[in-house]
Image 1 (cartoon, rainbow, N blue to C red):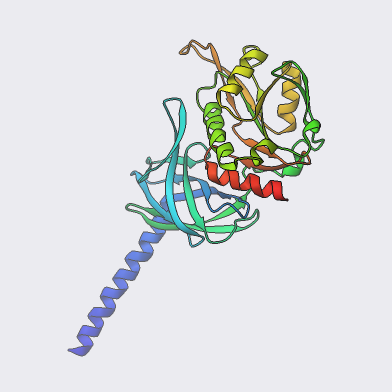
Image 2 (tube, rainbow, N blue to C red; image 1 turned 90 degrees about the vertical axis):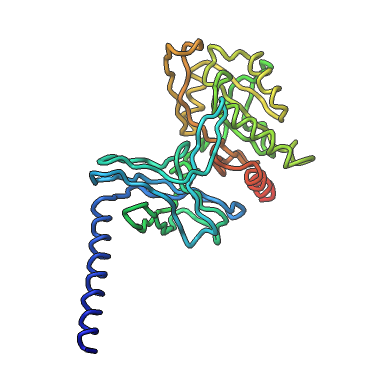
Length: 318
């Protein structure tokens, strides 16, 4: 009787192991994750984000329901979206990957938030992240840590200077602002989302910095739409946000030279659905330029005002 029970136990256990292994094999064949990476963050920053492309090779929908990582105190799925002309980040319960389709988690869209990091994440590190699916089980992904731009800061405007005209018609030289932290942003005053969202958040950053630190921080807004953004329009736009800011303009050739030096991009998009006539797709990074004129950090739309203020304080101390 004991032998019969033992044989029964072995058969049942073997079946469970077989089904588990088969399930794992099915997952590895049906779900393929590529280009997984995590944003590098300086030591004051306690949160980061992971991005990747998830391909579903099966004939049924796959649903990512959660993620986990030992490096973070909490891991959540978030999505950036445009709500009434403002960019908003919300936590979502799942991400649906269609049959024979794929979903890319990327800046400005779906991403995995790594909250309360237990240690800094530095460029070159590897961060294991476990993805949990509704029916398919779990899969471990090794994400490499990159800086937010995917580039070396040292190649960004190595001359540490540029020349344009400011909102008062005066010549602006970046080198004249040594000793200040400069927050550089490319945009246009008719922008419906990224530009007002960034400048509104900067108003909160300046409030958090308080006096006298805020006087050491200058926001520089370079228009990519010199055709419509006159000096007067730039001045009124900057004043609206009530921060220490300056709007810059120039000829298209002059502006393009500055855009290129910061490895930024923009593209004019004609639209028949808007009275604007045309809009722009453009780089939405906020470049933190230190007191020596060197680009030291790139902020993204997802970054919180309190974290940005802390990074600025650290840069001013260094």
